[in-house]
Image 1 (tube, rainbow, N blue to C red):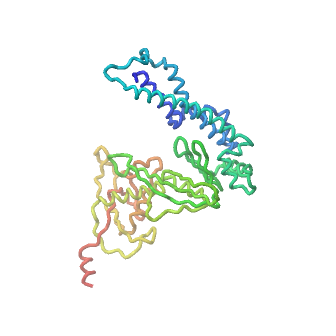
Image 2: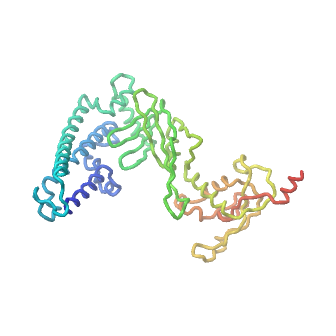
Length: 399
């Protein structure tokens, strides 16, 4: 394999990857199958099921043409990429001679791959033609919809209902990756993939979280993480297969609000359901690094949740300096809080987050807030966990 052939192989491989899994740049420029053939596919908004019948068939056909296109260009000697004349069959590199058996095996493998590519390109249109007969009755999408129909073998009423619900404004629609999307309407949970569409009617479907995965986005900040959760959708209708939805944990609340069925979360799976939940954990981590504040024993409950015991105290201990190390102005400085411990750390963290701007989420931890009671300004460095004093502990032991 010379340099021009290697260059062609790498280039064609990248082209195939961009066609099958189009990156965001290709999507913005309109270089995707759906955008190039938009006039043929029609509008998803008007006919949801019909659009995806054509889309999945078109994807299958275009992808089946990629191998035979490669062999066709290769047979034409890819003159655009070639930099030297091809070697004759009997011209072998004297430094690296190839055994006759290896030459025969390579030739046989190459010819078999060519024939399989041509066979795939011919078989796929035949399969699509079979699907198209009787108004797409044999297509996997319509086969699934027919199982939800009250009339055996009929799917048009179900397809019309889905299209009607898809046109409403209150649907949940989230792109999972470049080839799949999850949609939740009033009655349906839908996942679109490259060659198929999964449907589940909410009235007879169970949902459960299978696992939660946490990834560190930054090597420098351990709190900068991304959580992905996998939700198993199990339709109870006979003959309808299960499918998985993998979404960002921060999208869980939005999806849950659109569904009429509860999502079961096993006790051993923990994840942040919202940005606030994630901030609470980061807030707790930072407070744990601050000095401990000695306090008298607390017998009351948290003033906000009335469930947990107060376990933190706002006590000014920051240096009142900005990022550059310059002193802050009097208006920007933190002040002393003389309130007794009245809050648990989770409620105070939620109070802190609720008073920040949604635009500056990345710097919430650097911002300031005011005490819920006395309105004294404080930052996260001024929050400390409390610990009963030694004298109080001695009195308790004596009693």
